[in-house]
Image (cartoon, rainbow, N blue to C red; front, side, top):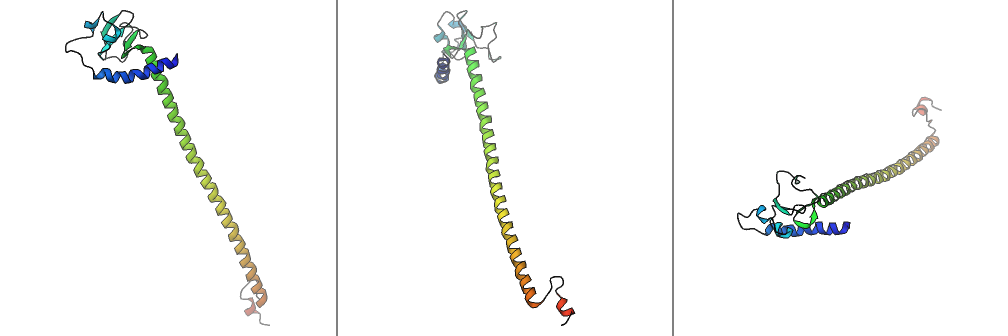
Length: 169
């Protein structure tokens, strides 16, 4: 049942383009089409067909939806005779809601993936920095060990570099 309405709704937009291209004879109003069929009434885009009263009415453009005093929404037809306004409103609401949800899901996924990628990059940079620090500490300790060996070899104490010159043997 839902698929039929969706197909009808989809077709209404493609047929509506054909209907927009049609022109009526000048001076022919929607009310002059009373007593005709829904299809004949809806050849003019400005017309609204009410199934309950079997009348062709001018669509009230000042209000978005036709008032229920003019024709109930489930009995009003515009564009296609098979789609009423209630189905049109529900379908458009569902499609708009799905698009909004899809937009926010994509936005969330993009932001999360961007943060996820940057956090992975930050972790790898931290690991590289830690490795560099370890290597630097190893080099420092090796240099200290070499310097200590040189000091021992020449009899220099680590406390004062001038101790050998102060105390001659």
